Length: 108
Image (cartoon, rainbow, N blue to C red; front, side):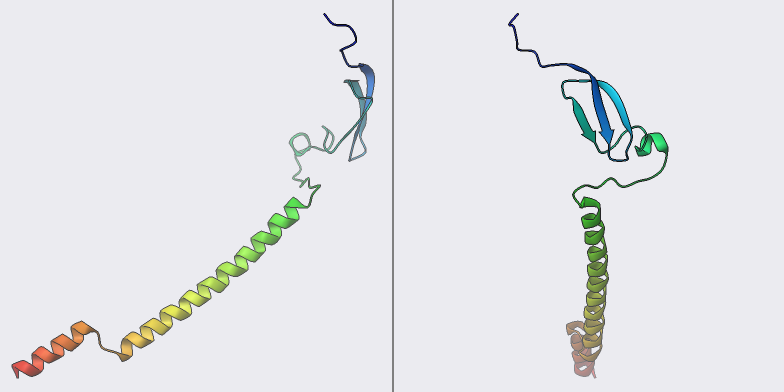
């Protein structure tokens, strides 16, 4: 076994959570900073909580709202197109209607 290749072990490593909770454990790092611990993690507390350090939750919620607005706008546009199509369809007779009309006039 090689000598001096193992990291230093700190048996009294201090872990500090973003919520303010601190506890001691063993680690190769003397001070550890974490975002979640058993005192504030939703699994342990039972309370729903968004953990967001880069703004990903807000960006997702913003995109979701924009998508909802775009969906409503798209539905309105499609509804207008359908109404315009139905209106133009009522004004002009279809080819089938023209042929039926021609048969009636030819038969009489």
